[in-house]
Length: 320
Image: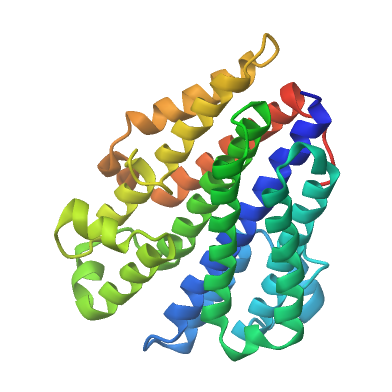
């Protein structure tokens, strides 16, 4: 496969996944903001969302130092100058799909094209302002549809595996960011006083993050207990059978790398294997003792390095 074709496929799936995960992060904060809490606590949540998404400088340049939910959501949903906004991601996914139209099935192309056209129509007609939660669910559904159509209609050749690589690298990155948004905002790591201070308030916050990764029912099935922060972290980081966990994503990355490997890809495979191994043999109590925020920050750095090596060894870089 031509490396430029692989690059377009890789970024098509990354942008589609990024749109979904941006919707998930926004939905977490939107749902949490409706819980009883102080104005200061709500402010910390929105500030954390921008800083962990690395968008605070761009947001400040446009809106100034005042951070409010309406501006943050507008910036991360419809601002085309923000390359990580939902509309920008869906546009870029469509443009990458257009560049390799002959490699995709008709169903995959039509799914990407229709998603972008529909989101423009919905934003123009005010669907987002009327019901942000429903809009975020629609974005997630279209991402699910894109993956389903890809798996159901494409030949499982190199093109398919580059699509999957983009999906799971982006998912790993965004799951780490999503977990960090919630856990870093707590500031104090899992002290008994924090956990017991307000159990009802705590339940709604932790269930919110689980629902944002479609993990609420999975948590109940796995642990059969009240929601505890350390178990939420374990589920989203170390469970290999959790679809959006960090270890689950790295397993998929390794599986798909193995299908496109070549003599020039040894460094990418080495780094991916080492990162997966570190997750596979980690323990959640050790991670929490050493600091969850530090762990997730290091993980994100290593995922970015892995993506850079993959680009050098497999892909011809395009505008991302």
